[in-house]
Image 1 (tube, rainbow, N blue to C red):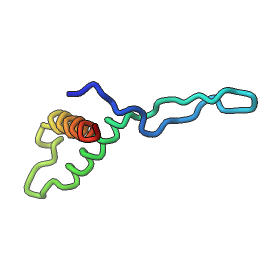
Image 2: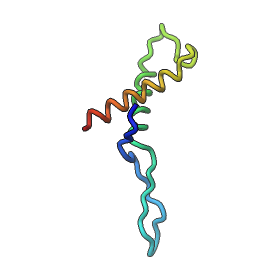
Image 3: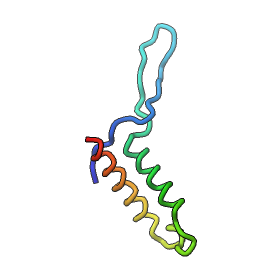
Image 4: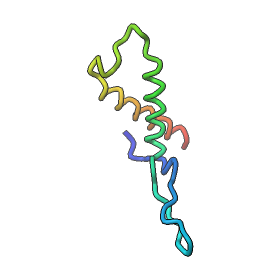
Length: 78
């Protein structure tokens, strides 16, 4: 899998106030965001005839494949 994260998805402003410097905190990476979207779509499309990954005992493989899809989406952006 790629070590590229795509940078922050939803950076958060921190330490913002009167006479202070603006600082940005990373938040979730674009890679994590893509993986979450891939996982969500994948789980939503499971046919009733298949066992849910947790029941089937392959949740780790599904999560790994979600990150593989995220890596492919990041590569497509290059």
